[in-house]
Image (cartoon, helix red, strand yellow):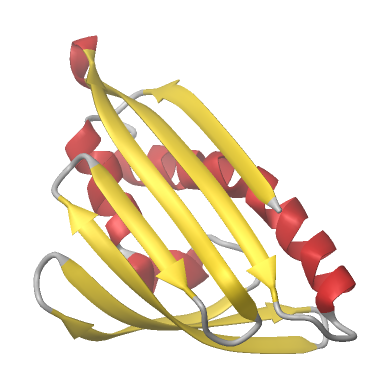
Length: 144
């Protein structure tokens, strides 16, 4: 399953990079995320334990986030329900301190009885991801 989205958005690439890199805050605004905890950080690489709750399913997995300052965040996992998961965020500066934010999501789930319902739930969530981050950015960065 693949999904990609790209949008010209207000706020600087530094603000967008900071927002996406704040993985421990995901449960505050991403539906289904019940926890996210950084286990290890070496500055440009984060080892993260995350937990999703999709209906009665509780899915725990580990991921790695590669941080390329203000230009890219690559999140990968082959743990838990994922045979392969890649979330590739890219940030390109635009005039007036705006940013072109792009995200490409690739998911391959392990075989099993839960594969189809998980694909449906995660596929729906993937289509909402950029919009949810955009709402979070407005909440954090808009002048009131």
